[in-house]
Length: 204
Image (tube, rainbow, N blue to C red; front, side, top):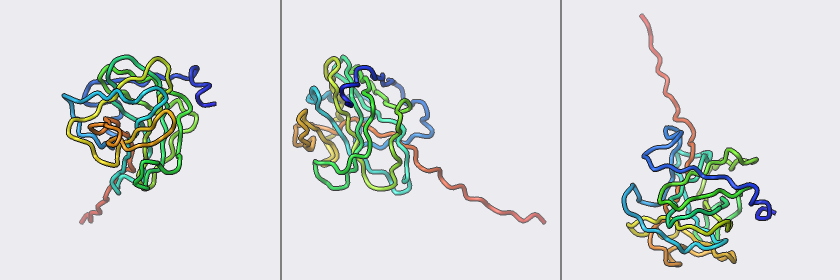
């Protein structure tokens, strides 16, 4: 049912090329990649109905957090549609844990070598808050035009934190599938506010 209705629910992910986007003061990005601008490699291996994914773990002080957006660097030209899935990911295996959330609609991501931001304001059910542990963020291709490429960094890959899933559903660590760097895929979260320490003064 999810894929059958997708063509009428396409949402365009917004793009940016600058150093900061909306809500930059509130949103904190969890990332595995070391990309900070400049060169990156474009990986074209995620084909029709396949998926790429990354594992994210927040600092202890950032729990519980809410998920505000997903940011990914598309490349290779063109555009295509992708669903977003969230899984628990505490087992250390290529296979993720329990499914936590799925987007109800696919999002159009472009391959113009810039960041695409996927926000969830149009979703009828928002992603759940995360109180502990690691989660896996998955982009699932829904072939609308043709799959695009995705950026990977150039300083090697963090083992066990990047994944691919075949169109048939088989999970692999990205390094075992020949991916050379970390996916430039990031999770935008809103951590709890920092407590304000109140001071008392005695007026004489």
